Image (cartoon, rainbow, N blue to C red; front, side):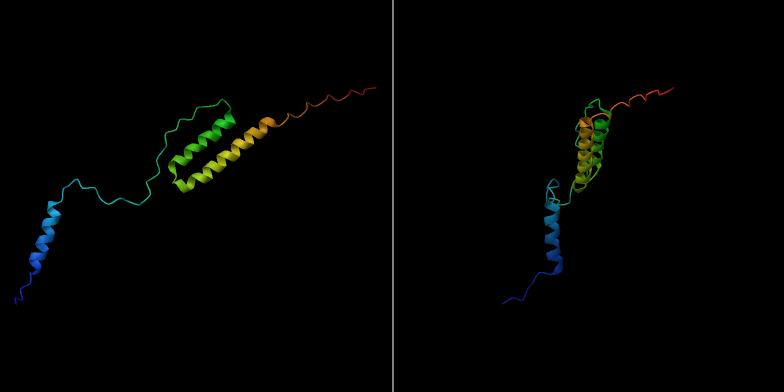
Length: 104
């Protein structure tokens, strides 16, 4: 029986050869880190109503936030648009009636 075993240099040489022969364009393991925030590139067309346009422009704030921050922006915009619509339904206050001139 032989007691021969490869030395550390032989084992290390084999590992080095494998690393050197791997093609350089082998994709790395997939990353499970979240992607950084990026604008969606959705165009916002002005409506002509200043209050609504201001609320819609607020949506651009979500472009720079991680996905978990979008909810706050969307809820804020929704509240604002709902307020704008409610204001359209409100009846204007009646015009003040002229005071009677009671001069004697």
